[in-house]
Amino acid sequence: MSVAAGALPAVTLAEAQAYVRIETGEEEAIVAGLIRTASALCEAFIGQVVVAREVVEVLCAGAAWQRLGATPVRAIGAVEMVAVDGSAVVLASGDYAVDIDAHGGGWVRLTGAGSGRVRVTATAGLASDRNGVPEPLRQGIVRLVGHLFAQRDGSGGEPPAAVTALWRPYRRMRMS
Image (cartoon, rainbow, N blue to C red; front, side, top):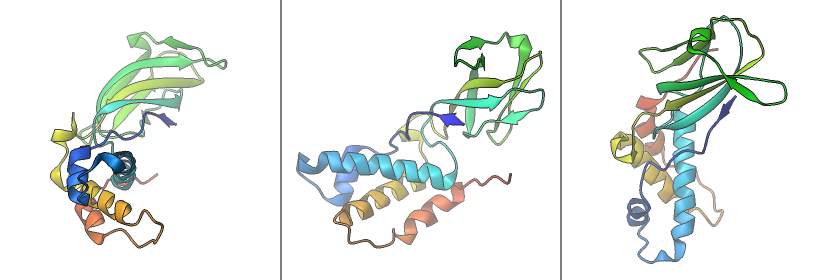
């Protein structure tokens, strides 16, 4: 189970406003919401966190390696044993092992005795900030914002095919 704040915007409000040709601030809140929506949809489509942020995941404790859901993982921080009542105790470094593979997959396993649930705090993201986000992802987000803004009256219409064409090279799918 992954617990994290929503997707961090990969484009600025000014960029999105320029794309949808808004010059006044009357609709800034709408555009800001559309940026958050488009950024989250981008992350869902590509299966990766775009702008680096902290993620917290709860895994079943055990001796087998378990993969974190968020990718690409940049760092794995705290590993805590979670009690039934929700309280947590930080595990000693000798009680667990962590690994980040070449594809950005984060892995955790317990090496000491323990069972139940483990809470892992990690940092995941393709780019450290919005300036490091690959341009095709940014362009797809801006185009999706433009589409959502134009269709905000509920008239419908499919998102532009260019959006998925821009995002597809970054898409990661995992077989269970």
